[in-house]
Length: 298
Ligand SMILES: *[C@@H]1O[C@H](CO)[C@@H](O)[C@H](O)[C@H]1NC(C)=O
Ligand SMILES: *[C@@H]1O[C@H](CO)[C@@H](O)[C@H](O)[C@H]1NC(C)=O
Ligand SMILES: *[C@@H]1O[C@H](CO)[C@@H](O)[C@H](O)[C@H]1NC(C)=O
Ligand SMILES: *[C@@H]1O[C@H](CO)[C@@H](O)[C@H](O)[C@H]1NC(C)=O
Image 1 (cartoon, rainbow, N blue to C red):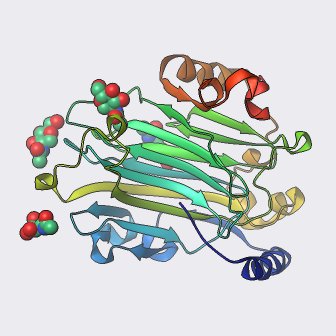
Image 2 (cartoon, rainbow, N blue to C red):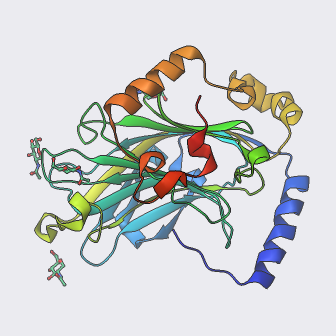
């Protein structure tokens, strides 16, 4: 996602963000009401909220895709969404679920689901963008058919690390290595976004397989969105908020590292299902020029 903004308005935004951080003593624990928590950002009625706010469907046809964004903004959170991807021939389509801040030096954490021909595997494409710089792609096949049913896709984002998980199984970790000069998303509020769009240029088999518009509209479904999140970069506040503590789950905020069981699962996914990792791409990073985070092992 690209956002453009000139530098004068970007400093205004920084001032606004700082005031937002000082003023917002708000802890959000929210479960699954798309009416209350999201706005349609484009695509008009191709974005549909159904079942009293419990279900969101996003469609793509030959004139437009569609997308939604959360009303709330977060700094750190444990954010889960159940997603059921476009069934059958979804080649050329990209469905997304991601967190992003705004401005020229934005932060973003991505789940992008790259469609395929019927019976061929979806790719779950992930990226971590900090202060406007990404190029940190990792891609995975899933160990199930993500079009057959809903599955949980989660972000855990705390001051120490970021974890991408699928049905509770970690697939990717990004540690806070700020002290080693790697920018970490810890200053900007992010919103939650979902969308579906035409990715003909690159999504399926490198762009060789195009969308079959006779199969349109293409529809992805989202439900059971859950957020444990705070807007204060301050752990004591997170734990002392009553609505947060009654949610009975703030361990995510303090967690310093993965336990050994999670590390074993992460390794299982990376050994068996990871199909692309920027950290091993010697064409992009010849002669040991890998980014710092790639040189650090668990
Ligand atoms: C788009 O799809 C509609 C409905 O299937 C069809 O009537 C129309 O001709 C299509 N337009 C283009 C430009 O393909
Ligand atoms: C999609 O595939 C399923 C089986 O995988 C089949 O039951 C269904 O009829 C197909 N739908 C369409 C629109 O082709
Ligand atoms: C996803 O999480 C929900 C609770 O949020 C749980 O009921 C469901 O079983 C989970 N599904 C999977 C496939 O893990
Ligand atoms: C689609 O299927 C082909 C053939 O199995 C595979 O090479 C590719 O990785 C799959 N996924 C995408 C998004 O292209």
